[in-house]
Amino acid sequence: MNFHSFGDRGNPPLILLHGIGAGHRLWLRQIEHFRGSHFVIAPDLPGFTGRADVKRPDIADIAGRLAQELAARALGPVALCGISAGASVALAAAARMGSGVSRLIVSAPQARPPRFMLGLQILISALMPEAALAAIGRSAVRDDAEIAAAAAEDIGALGKPGLLAAMRALQRMDLRAELPGITAPTWVFCGERDRVNLPAARAIAAQLGGARLWIAPDAGHLWNVEAPARFNEALADALRGDGHAGLSAAGTHSVPPKIN
Image (cartoon, rainbow, N blue to C red; front, side, top):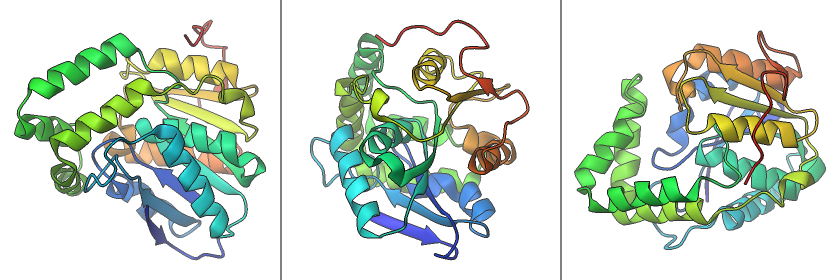
C-alpha cells in the first residue's frame, strides 16, 4: 500500500481514501486545501487503482492492512475520510481501529451493496471494451482536467481485469455486522443526485448512533471533484466537529430504510 503524505506531520492527521479506478490523486483539491492545517495522507488502495497486483481484492483485508499500517506510523487518532468504495474501506477500518479514529467522514458509503444491480453492472462491464470502461471512469471526474488525466493513467494501469475484480470485491462485501463496532463521531455525506447510494447513506447514518447526515444539494457521486469548494467546506466542518448548513442528525430528513 503506497502512502502519499502532504503537510506538516505535527498537524492533525487526515486520511483520504479513494474509490475504484482513480487513486490518491482523486483528492487533489482536498490535498491542496487541507495540507496547510492537517498532515494529509492519501494511500493508493491495493486492488482498487494502479497496477492490479492483488488478484482478488477484499474490503476487509484492505481495511485491516490500512489499520495496521496507520498504527505502525504512530500518528495517534486520525480523521478518516473515504468516498465511494473508499467510504466502505473507511467504515471497515474504523470498526477495527476504535479510538484510533478521531472523526469518520464517509461519502456515498455502502455496507452491503445491492447485489443484483451490481452483478448486472459487472456483467455489462465484462462485455464492454476496455477503452469504453476507461472512458466511463474518466467521465466521472470530467469536471477537473488534471484529475481526469490522473484517473485515465490509474485506470489504464488497473486494466479491465482489475476493474472487474474490484467491482466483484464490492459485490461480496457485507459490513452490516461491523457497523456497531464503530465508535468514532461520524458524518455521512451523499450527493443529492447520487440516487444509487442515497438509501444506503441514510440507513448507515441511522444505524451509527449520533451520526450526522448531509445530503449535498444538486451534487453527484464524486462531488469532491465536481464541487470541491462545497465538499471542502463540509469536510472542514466535520473535522472541527461543527454542524454544516443543512446538516442534521440522521433520520430527521425521512425514515431511513433498513440495511438488508
